[in-house]
Image (tube, rainbow, N blue to C red; front, side, top):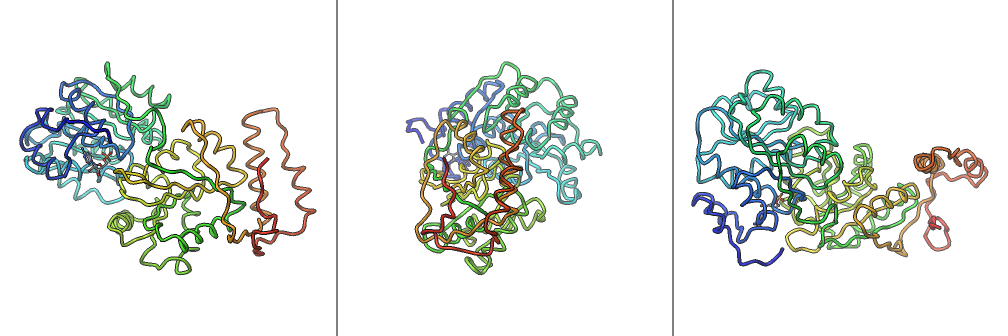
Length: 445
Ligand code: AMP
């Protein structure tokens, strides 16, 4: 983090906030706070391009708390929207911590649990609501929320919100809330979609960007392994977890919850004990997910397997390793994923497993991060499993689709290749051979 002799005192925040900041252990503002706080205090609309881990939550919360000042009336005056329940909870915890010496009331609303307690909390009177869009709109239509006093609104992780299809709810929301208000929009990336939303949502915003668009966290060392198939990915993962002690807080990302389940089942007891391994995906109950994350944060869980949807925007600090078991298909997720490691001046490691069908996606990701991810040879002692025919066919089909996407006149090589594979010695997928002389590793051109 950039050195500066600046302190939080310079912002002329009130004493209650300064005390809470001190107690939180923040000695100096982060770059996004440095830039955003004075502008937000002056009432400006802000477009902030910043990833989690930059201190963006406090960057918008502190000015918002200055504006709200103290508890007043029954109805909310500030609204913060977040794409996931976990992020909403995390924001509300951060605000509660910063507002601890004030009487400001924060209520968090999210789906997946019954609304009863949330409604009760709203009825007690509220100053700030932190919510996911779906639940907020539900409770609004049930007339549990009066929006006419809202004068500050924040959209956090706006890019994710749009990826997750929340745009209709956001539009609806913008229709119902008072037009005279301060708006802040935060996003990890600045895509065209975000730009369009910012035109709808913000009025003469000041744009603040703490890292150039979608550059990867500076403190993360990135590595790419070419791995021929699922079985070998499991072997490589096993290899790392068994041979490397520094893999002590490992976050594994998979493309789908099915793969997350498979990874979990393959590691369970063979590689890590049940108590050290957790999986979180959208099918898991809210409490299971929260418990898994808490245990991972506390350090009692060594390996957490997650899909992007649930991991989005979560502040899990001090992750030693991020492993992209699958290459993400939403390319910005690569940036989000690896942003989980290398925080707070700790060097983190992000390892990506790439099959032949992923080369296309890796090229796109490398374009976004404006760098080539360094390739690493597979460890000598790794067992390379042969690729089962259906898995190989799926990959070839995917490659054909990619080619077709780039060139709509492309007819498809899959059917030609398929013949070759049928004629080749049967790959059962069960046979496992040592790397040397196996020829199992598909070398790229
Ligand atoms: P965020 O990007 O808002 O998710 O924040 C990431 C982490 O940085 C959180 O754990 C915050 O508590 C922490 N943090 C925020 N601001 C500061 C600061 N000025 N100094 C040190 N840590 C901070």
